[in-house]
Structures are given as structure tokens and as C-alpha cells.
Image 1 (cartoon, rainbow, N blue to C red):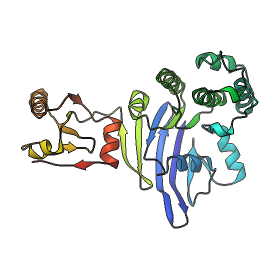
Image 2: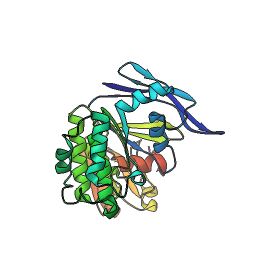
Image 3: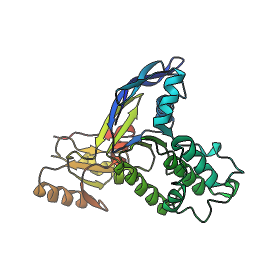
Length: 299
């Protein structure tokens, strides 16, 4: 299965929220979606679901194009689900009833409900009314509902919101299982370090376009990284081209071999870097680089 989004454009009045966005995702992939709040992540998902009008663009799944007709939208929603909003949960229904509804609507089959409840460790509360649930319990329920729908394409907006570290790890593990089953999953998230654990690629959305895509399967430039003061950075000389100084105070020096790495580790430590590491830029580093950064190229 392949999902393709072609030339997707969304405008509100004179303001362009999504500007001619195109991308393609193969089955068995998890794509992270990253951007500051209010810059179009949820709008992208809503446009893909056709919950909002789009000025241009199409969704193509396995060579079938889905446009704006009611027939196309109904067919699209059999293939794609969007993470439920907690506000849409029924307070007087139990968690089990919610999961059963999703299983029956999408799969005509509620047999997997018990397995999903066990997988997400929900047995101790799932038969209680939702009105008794904490934020984290509600979030796990919403995720369980998507698992019950079991569509080949899943759009997840802030799936980790409200989860404690143990349940973040649990949901991450289930996402990896879903990927192994051939699902296409897009995850919008502010837990950037968490995305590094399971995402195949991370799309960075800026000014209505994807301005950078980090492919976690490609070879990466290695950097020596350490936090130093701005004054200390400005005083450094003979740094290689491509050296970055991020607003977080992180100095990132590209290296080509082990000798380089040792030299620059010593240099950063001599400039009071509390910790210095060697490795590629993480998603969190790219976030600062793209949205809040100052780059210095030193010859």
C-alpha cells in the first residue's frame, strides 16, 4: 500500500496554511510530523481526512484518487482513521463500549477488543464509565479505539499527550508493532526524543511547506556536540564549515574522523562544556535549528 498526498493547499481567506504540499509514504512506515503550535499540523490531518475544505490537492491510496465527493470521502474513511479527540468521548459509556464501537464500525468484528485491552494494560479500568478516567486513561482509550478500527492508514495527533513515561513506552511499542503489520502511521508530536525511537522519517512543517525531512535510515553527518556560552563560541577559530550554534546553547561541530572528534571534544571541554557527545543531530536539535536557531559557518 502507498499513500500519496499531491499538491495539497488550504487557505483561510488571504492566509495560506498549507502551500502545495506533496509527499508519498510506503506501507510499514511511521512518519513523525513536527512544527510549532498553530502552524498547520492538525490542519494537514483534517485536510487529509476531508474534514475541512481544501482549495487544491488530492489523496491517492494504491492508485485510487480520493477527491471531495461524498462517495470518495466515505471510501477514504474506510482506509484512514484520525486520532479521536477526548472531547468526543461519551462520559457515560465505558472504555470497552468505545473500543467495541470502533471495532464494529470499521471491521465488523469485536473479537480483537479483549486483545487490545490486554495489550494496552487497560483491564483494571476499561469497564468503568469514562467520566471516572484520568487524562492518561482517556488518551490510552483513544489509542485503543484506533487500534480497534485497524485501518491501513492512521493519523495520530499528539498521541502521547497526558501519558506518563511508562505508557509513552507502551504506546511506542504498539506503534512499532502496527508498523510491522504494514500500517502507514503519521504521528504529530512534541515529544521529539520519543520520535527518534520509532519514526522512520520526520517531516518539519514551516510556512505551510515541508522545509526539511530527516530520514532515520540514511547515513548522517556526525557532530561533536556540547553546550558552551555564546561568548566562548564567538571566540573559537578554525572551526569547519557547517558548524552550528543553536539558540539552546548547543555547539555542533561536524567531524570527518575519530581524530577530528577527539580534537573537538577537547576543545569544547576546554570551553566549559559540561557534557560533550559525538553523534548525528537529533530531532530536537533539528527543531531548534529550523525554528529558533542561529547558524555560524566558520572557516
